[in-house]
Structures are given as C-alpha cells and as structure tokens.
Length: 301
Image (cartoon, rainbow, N blue to C red; front, top):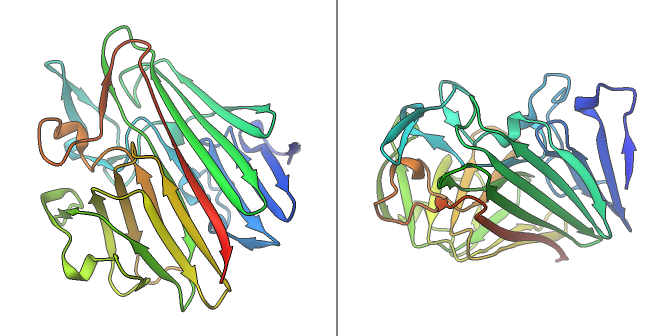
C-alpha cells in the first residue's frame, strides 16, 4: 500500500493497493470512494469521469459507499420512533445514497486488507451517530469488499448500507442475475408499487446491456450476477452475502457505463418499514452492528 498524490489537498490523497497485475486506488478523504480498479491497465470498474476529483464529485468515481441507506428517500423525510426527520438535498432535489459519500474517511492497512473507517456523530446529513467500515481485499483476479455499520446513537436507530460500483460498457456486454420482484418507479424515480419482474426487465438469462433504460431496485436478489464481455475476453462474477437482498440496476441511455449496486435496503425503505418486500433497514440498538461481504471475480472467456 502506498500514498500517492501528496501534492494534492488532503481530501484528494489516494491509497494504492497492488496485487500482481491488479491495482486498486482508493480516495479515503474523498467520500471513501474507489478511484479505480484495473488489471493489466484495463478497468474492471469504470474509470472516474473526467475531472471528478477536481470537480469535487465523489459520485463520478469508479465506486462509492452507501451508508446509512441507499437510493432515494421520498420527500427527503422519514419517521422513526414517532418523530419526523428531514434530510438535505444531495442531488437534484433528492436525499439519496446516504451520508458516507459526502464525508471524509480514514485509511488503515491491516495485513492484506485496507480498511476505510467513518465515525459520524450525527448532524445535517443523518440524524443519528454511526460508525462505518469498508474493508478492501485485492487479489490479482478479484476484489472483495466487506461493509460494516454500527449504531453509535444513544437509542435504537435505523441503518442500512451498500456499494455503488460502476462498470464499463462495451458493444457485446451482457448482464445476468435473478430476482423475484421489482420496484416500479414513477416520474420522480420513487417507487409506485412492487411487482414480479416483468419480461422486459428479466435478466435470468444473459441480456445485452442497454436494450432498455433501467433505474430500479430488484428485490429478492439471489446474491449472484454475471457481467460478460465477449469482446474483451473476460467476465466479472459478482457474489454477495444474503444481507444484500436487493440489487439496484442503473443502465442509462447514451453512456459508456452502467451500475449494479448490492444493497441491503429497498428504495425508500425508511418509509416502508412495515410493508412488503422487507425494507432491508435495520433498527439497531446502541452498539448494534451489521456486516456483509461482496466479491467481484474476474474470469477469462
């Protein structure tokens, strides 16, 4: 592990991890994000968008953390234990993707792992104190990320987590995964109902990436997905612990990237705690903790 970019402001210092031909670059102070993950110089996650760090935009990196919730919260408001809480506008009027990507993390090397840690005392971004960790382990053929969240508030508090990796698109790329349900969105990109996966969103067999615009939460995810790049000669297999019961799939029109996001909570889960499907938001007692691991493995075709 080495520190790079020491001539940049501290917020933009990076940590580089190398394993054989694989390289992982992290930006702890820049939202705890992944700047890049490459093998033999080829991006496994998308490369950061141009000037991402100069533009002060962690969302433009290769991946970033989702703590203490993923995706959108309706009306930027939720109720917990009989009290309503307001959340700030983080993007286009939405409260979205939690607080972690807007905060600096710290880095520590521990054997073959690099741990990024965040201690948040509670405040404008999120009303409750929490501790979060991202534990990265890199090998030449795989990247493993363990997510940990702990309630540091003095009373039970809701918490959830996930990751938001982006992947490069290519003309022959396909995506395959299985899920039992889907949250259909309205024009405001918030769920209007929960249905079985419709045929045009069914990825149980490999489907070319980009046939349809997709920005949905797939529920009852089996915890496995496969991205195949026949024109690049490799595939990427994603596996995740059962705590990641939901998969957000984002395939925008006209972009050279897409995202599949293993997450614990459904979209707007904070406002759907008693509904179906399970919200994936955990109300933890003081000191209560949840963790889960996801793995991205490269294989030749």
